Figure 1 (cartoon, rainbow, N blue to C red):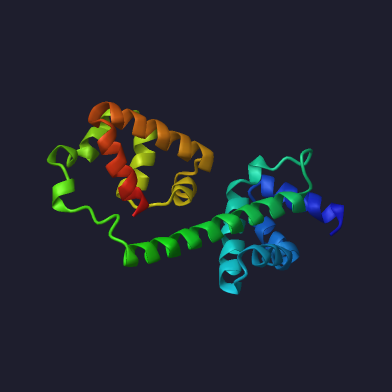
Figure 2: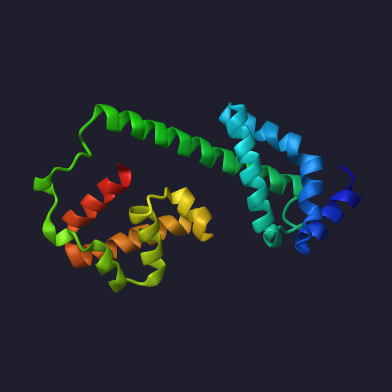
Length: 188
């Protein structure tokens, strides 16, 4: 690809002009599909990865810095990371499905559910909103950490940090046993 065309695409991206996506797709989609396919080894998943990558590219267009990387390098990294996240997500979901089918580890009976823990959602109001939002997404909306990161537009590392701090705050309210039960519910 010519540097002139690449420069034009970057300008369009920074101007939030939708022509940029069309040009990106025409010039990079096949190559990015190859990147995704190499990681996920499934055509349908690779197509999903490319689509998700283009959404991320559009959302993060203003974060691209021409002095740090060439356009293709930036696109490659986003696509590769999205593919890795997708592969982990698929593997985690299939692992959980198998584990739930063959194990009763997460089948918490009536005897293990304590009444004083039934008001967890109400106690979330006692912690800072930035932690509450993450805990709510993970525990009550059933999102994975990656899904919460995408949905809330918060970096994955920040999601993990806020989860850890949020659980620490809940531990102050309920004690360690509650946090263990919440964590188990997140894994199931």
